[in-house]
Length: 211
Image (cartoon, rainbow, N blue to C red):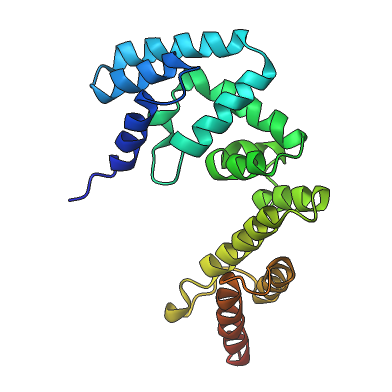
């Protein structure tokens, strides 16, 4: 049986020998890896106090380092980002998003989707709307355009996941519009275009068989 926390332990191992500017986080990672949870949380609180006393630029540098090196796909957020640090990291990401840092926008969507949805009052597809606004603000940023396109494709993929059992979870017309939007966002050579075309054919076939 695979260890679902393996990615988190690997990230914490990297954190022990991470950026020397934040040794308290390294100590948190060391203690957490050693199974000393109470002591680790105390070290995390010390790190939070140091960051709270630092300037905004330092908090962003810590946040960017954490998101690039530690808070990566495959980890459990609560293991590598304890509660005492969560608010500081989230605030730094919002500030960077407001400065139009595309990486901050992506990290917010990836790691704080509930907070993003709350920011938009839980509107239908709040994540998509959040990314649309970011694309409008930075229309030439390819990473944001790709992220929005991938989100739209994932939405349609979920809607069509149970077609084999005769159930369509969404609105086929709306999903075709999502795919058209995704198409306009993607570069010509993007591999996601294959998914767009496959899903478009799937939906068109479904519509053609409706009574």
